[in-house]
Each structure stands twice: as C-alpha cells, then as structure tokens.
Amino acid sequence: MVETSLYPRPKPNFIVENDAITWKGAGEISPLVVDGAFSQLSKLFSGPLEVASKNFGELLVINDAITRIDTTRTSPTSQHHFGKAVDINTSGMSNEKKLRLLKSLQDAGFNGFGFDDLRGFLHADLRNEKAGWAYNDYNKVKQTEWAGRKIINLILENRNR
Ligand SMILES: [Zn+2]
Image 1 (cartoon, rainbow, N blue to C red):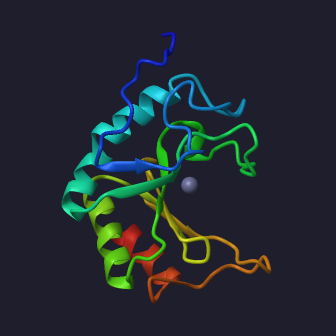
Image 2: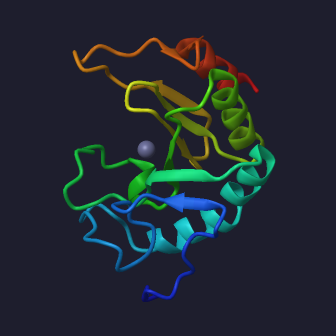
C-alpha cells in the first residue's frame, strides 16, 4: 500500500515538537524506516496513546516518533523505524507524575520503555515482549535512577506485571 500524507495528524491531546516526524511529509526520514511505519504510528496515536493520555489526564508532548534521516539511532530494530514508538517529554514533571505516566502507558498496552531523566523523556513502544532499559549519561555511563526509582527495579516490575 502506498503511503500518503493523508494519515491523520495526532489528536489535539498530544503536542508534537516541531522537529518530530509524525506524519508523511513532516521531514526527511531515515532509510531504516520500514514501509507501513506511518500507518502503524497513526494506529499508535489513535489507540494506545489516546487511551494512556486520557488516563493520565494531561496533554502529552511528543519529542520524537519516526526516525529522522539525521538520527543517531543505529539499531536496526529500534521501534522508531516501525512507527511503534514515541518519546514523551517528561521535563518539569514531578516524580509522582512520571510514575503515573508510566503506569498509564503500561495499562494502555505499551511494553517497551527507555528511561531518561537527564534529557527528560520516557520512550514507550509497542513491541510484543516487555522490555526496559536505561540510557547513558553524558559520561557514557548508564543512568541508574528515573523518577526517584532505581531503573533496574522499574525494568523488573515492567517485566513481571
Ligand atoms: Zn525512543
């Protein structure tokens, strides 16, 4: 199926950062992005993210979605290449609010999470298996805490729910 620019843009309960690619034509995409990615992303926005956002009860700011051509992502399996991932801005959120956001996303069907309190975002994706990870800090050492919790515990709790 040929993708067009007609896929609906995210609903008004999401704010999308200017340089985030969320619909065809919004910017130059990486060659790693697969066919059907925009269609998947559209489903993510209208399905699980809509549910999570309603449960969370506040506007979500999306930093990033589809992989850009100038990405620093190298993994061929990044869910951003498949339209199955969003990075949600968490800067300025209290720890309590971040943990509530995580729970809302888990309850809505997101399975993969990347925790980053330095750059201020939570990666959430729709992979099939439950997974979680920490990002490196500026010294290339893995961050150990997110929202005042040990990331290793957040990963285990996500896996065991
Ligand atoms: Zn991400």
